Image (cartoon, rainbow, N blue to C red; front, side, top):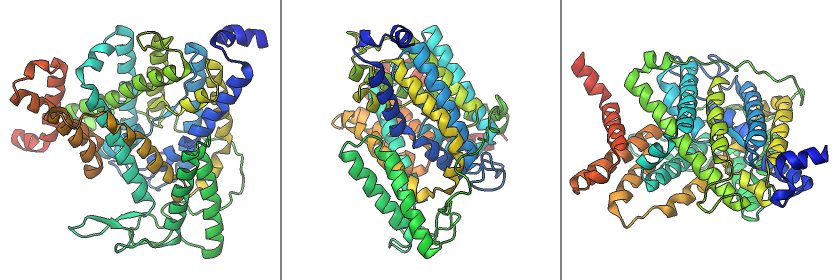
Length: 479
C-alpha cells in the first residue's frame, strides 16, 4: 500500500513523505473548513426573485443544514478528484465572493434553480475555454490590475456583508446616513459583543500564525454565544435592524451531533431558465461575470500554490496545469449542479503546503475529511451567524491585501480599479463594480487616443455592460 501511494503520487520524488502529506492535508482542511458554515450563512438568508430561500422554501434559513451537507460533499469529492487526477496539493470548495455574487446579484433576478443553472453554464464554458486553448485570449483581454481590483472589491463586499449580518453596521432608516454603527450610532446587544470577541480572537490567532485560525475562532465564538444565551436567553432578530437579538440562528446544543446528511439540493438547477426570467443580455452578462471571477481566481491560486510548493517550471507554470484547470472547471459546473454555487480552488491550500504537502495525496486527505464532515451538518443549524461572520471580515482583509498590486499613480488604470472596488460594496452588486471598471477603462483609453491597446474582446464586453446599465431606458424605449 505504501509503495503504491509513493509511486502514484510521486511522494519521494517531490521530497515529501506520507506523514507530511497526511498532516498537510489535515491542516488545509482545518484552514478552510469554515466554508461548511459560511456557505449556508451566505446562501440561506437571501430570497430569490420569487421570495424563496435556497433549500428552505419561504422560510429564511430553513435550508441551512442541507446547504452545509452538500457543500461538504461536493468539496470532498472534487478535492479528491484534484488529488487523483492532477496530483497537486490544491483543495476546492464553494468560492467565497462567488457565492455572494450568486446570492445577491443573480438569484435576486430569477429563481435559485435558474441561478444555479447559470453557474453550470459558466463551468461548462470555462471547461471549453480550457480544452480549446481560448483561455489565454480571455486572460489577455482584461488588464491584470483590473483583475486584481475585482478580487479587492469582492473582499470589501463580503466584509460589508459580515458587518451587516453581525449587527455591527445597520441601516439607519434615514436618507442620510443610509447606514450607521449599530443602533442609533451605538453598538447594542450581546450578539454584537460576541461578534467583536470572535473577530478579535480570529485576528489574534491569524496574526500568530495558528493553523486553522478561522475554524478555531468559529468554534470558540460559538461556545461563547452558547454561554451568553444560557444567561440572557435572547430571541432571533430575523433581520430586524432594531433588534438586539441573534441575527438568524439562536445558539443552542443540538439534539443530535451526527445525523444522516440531507443531499436534496443535488440536481436542483435549470440550465436555461435564467434567459427567460432575466433576459438574454442580463443572463449573458451574469454568466460572463461568474466566468471572469472564477477563471482568474483559479489562475492566480494555482500559480501561488505551485510557487510555494516548488512545483512551477521556469515560466512560472505549475506542473500539470492543464489537468488542474480541467478539474477546476468541472468543479465550477458541479457546484451549480449540486445547488450550492460554483466550486473553485482555495488559496488556503497554502497552509497545507506550508506544513509540508507537495502532492495530491494531501488533497485526498482533505477531501476525505470533508466527506466525513457531512454527517455533522446538524451542528451548523445551531451556530449563530455572529460566530461565523467574523471570518468574512478576516477573509475580506486577505482579499483586500492585493490592492498593493495596483499602480495608483497611473490614473488610466487606477480610476477603473477604484470604481470596480468601491461600487461593489456601495451598490451591493459585484456586477455593477466589474461593469463600471470595464466601461471606464475603455472610455479612458479611447479619449487618451489609446484605443488600439484595448483588446477587441474588452470592447465587446464593455458594450454589453453599457446595455446592462441602460437596460431600463432601453426596455422603456422599445416598449
